[in-house]
Amino acid sequence: MVRKNGTELMKEKLISVVIPVHNEEGNIKLVYRETKKVMEEIKQEKGYEYEIIFVNDGSTDRTLEILRNLKTQDKNLRILNMDRNRGEAAGLTAGFRFAKGIYIFTMDGDGQNDPKYFKEFLLKLEKGYKVVTGYRVKRKEPLLTRKIPSRIANKLISVVTGLKVRDNGCSLKGYLAEIPKKVQIPHGFHRFLPALFGVRNEEVLEIPVLDRKRYWGKSHYGLKRTFEVLRDLITFPFIMKKPLFFEKFFKCGFLICFSAGLLVILWIFLKFSFIKVFLELIFLSAAGISFLIYKNLKRFNKAQREGVFIVEEL
Image (cartoon, rainbow, N blue to C red; front, top):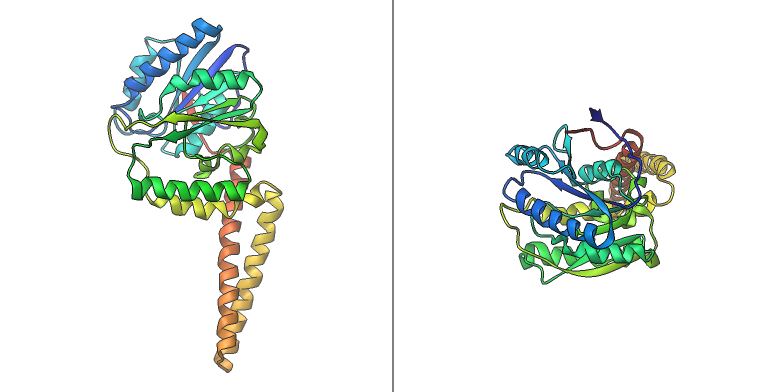
């Protein structure tokens, strides 16, 4: 059955683990085995049942085939198959909406995240925290292309969102289930979790986690991601207030500034002056920023109306 924008009913004493994957054929078995081992230990120690939800995000390798084989051996494994490659944000949203547990844990499917930390996440969630998030120490990544851009991006995200999280890019997270089900996450906005869910600083706990090298394959991320963060970040304050209102506001702002810029160009042709050129630069800059914010808000609002995923549960 194909599902779009659905939400499953939650079950008591059940934990959901959501793992989006794209072309991870060499990592799937390792990630599954490690996750299964930890969740079985939690089941024995704490009495929680569990489900492991792999979201196959349009993989073109043997990822889906391997998942299907694993599913025949494990009733706790669920597969959500995306209609096409939609990105990590859509994969997480689908997993959140289909998860049946009262707690939801997330991790990457590349083997860099160690699920052993889920035990500690669970203890903190049981104490009343709404979100537990890992921050990576001793990162096994290149300094110039990954570590430094990540530090800059995380600092900017912390300043703009007001949520003092050191490592928004760490996929190891734990949630009270109702928290991530609130929002359809547009492409790229998963980088602002958990701030996008509107949680407060006192509701979030950070736990240091050791970073590991990718077991197989190459990273899907690059330096381009830092620029995408900056592009989306200027929109964030308006998303958290009145996104529908501000979509219209910045659309009007763009039209006004662009029209004013055209008039100034005509004025320059009639009589040149550097003051008019400076004025033109101001109007064009304002028009460009307004258009960028408008397009991002339009994308966010469309995601809330129409959803960001179409999946079939196999």
